Structures are given as C-alpha cells and as structure tokens.
Length: 142
Image 1 (cartoon, rainbow, N blue to C red):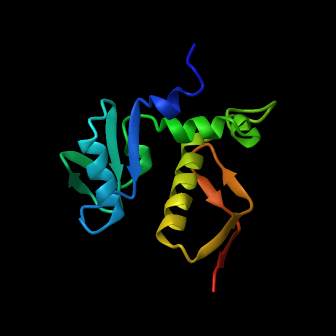
Image 2: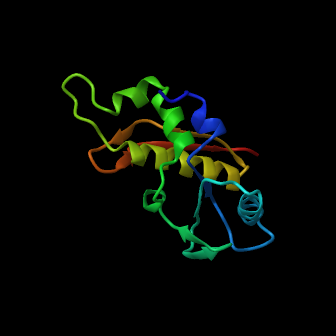
C-alpha cells in the first residue's frame, strides 16, 4: 500500500508548468534549479513554446507529458467532486486529466497575472473527452 504522502515527498516525476528558455523569467530559474538539484525522478517541462531546455523537451500540452502529475492527481482525488469523476451511480467516468489541466492552467494564469483577484468557473462541464467552462468570471484588482 502506498503512503498518501508519497506524491508530496517522493513524486515519481516532477512537472514544471510555465518553464521558459528565457533566463530572465522565473520559469527558467525553476527549470534550472530542478535539473541542478540532482532530483532522481522524471523531469518534465510544460511551456507555451515547443523546444528543449536543459536537455529536456518542452511540452505545450500537459496531456503529452509521459509521466503522471502525482501532486495534482493526488489533490483532486481528495475532493468530493474529484471522487465523482471516476463515475458515480449511473454516471460514467469522465476525463479527469482535463480537470487537472484546467486547474494547472488556472494556477499558471493567476501566477502570470497578479492583478487577477478571483476566477470563478461555474459550471465546468467535464466530458468523456475534454472539459468546457460554461461561464467564467474574472475579477481584477485596481
């Protein structure tokens, strides 16, 4: 049996979302620090642009990353809604990876735009393949 803290302290792979090939950006520093840290697991980078950084490919889509994203998956499984994504009563399972991708992209958006105070998606329809934000509200600071 796997310890529930394993994804936090011993992930099988690490994914840096927002990696950059521009040395002045924080995504570059995060990628460099991870590679230089001696981390023994799989290292992956997701960016808006294709290419390579520190000998690793840049993926433009989280779904293309060959290893699971342990932390995001682990966090989603702990929520009431996350448990229902596996299927519930007569409702078939839906695309959990799309929900993880939405969560990570929202985090990246909030990180890159500190002027955003709130983001609300209600509802997020999760389909057999993909997810659709039906209504989105973004609140910007002054």
